[in-house]
Amino acid sequence: MTEAAPKRAVVLLSGGLDSYTAAAMSRAEGFGLFALTVRYGQLHSCELDAARRVAHALPVERHVELEVDLGAFGGSALTGHGEVELDQPPDRVGIPSTYVPARNTVLLSLALGWAEVLGARDLVIGVNALDYSGYPDCRPEYVAAFERVAALATRAGVEGAPLRVRAPLVHMSKAEIIRQGHALGLDYGLTHSCYVPSTNGQPCGRCDSCQLRALGFSEAGVEDPVFSRGRRWPVIP
Image (tube, helix red, strand yellow):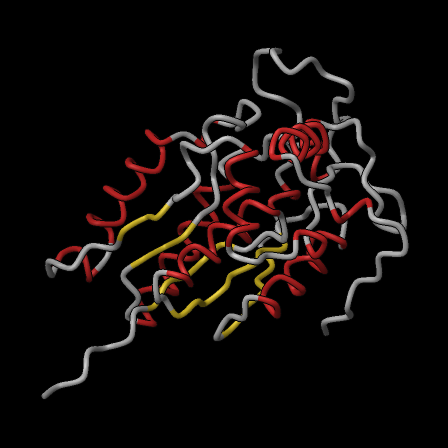
């Protein structure tokens, strides 16, 4: 009897709680995880440190870090062009200054190339439409459209084995995501969410990402371990 080939998935791992949860959900479904973290020109290295911690904790079979400097184009406060908006009302409209032009398209394209080499059929991304902060490339319509591109643009797709884009969090609230992570035993103290952290990596508590995270933990009825006193992160080379 021929043994079934192992299921492989390439997961975009940012070090945030969403990508950590999406990866862990895929792992629980039996996927071997290959993590891709992109240094796209983001200002804060603590995000990359968090991705290493999360990759180690999952664990993944391989973790690749690539450098593709989207900051060379400008256009986003996350790459040092403009100011991060603080203390914004939760019902504000419009695309915020932290939107990085075409970021998810670039990142998914890189993941797609690696997936073809690995023979993986699945890409995993932790986008979320309910708490998406106005980013156009976090919507279910976008995920479906990229999946169609992947079917047209790859050898696997042309040969009848199209890749799937798995976005398991896309219709979940932040509280639901956190509850799911707790059910899977995830340590969210390893993650990083803040757009304007202090020099030692402490969150500001005022940017969109911090506010969404705080609201999610509050609604989930659990304590955010990032704010626990005496927290010490492991050093992952």
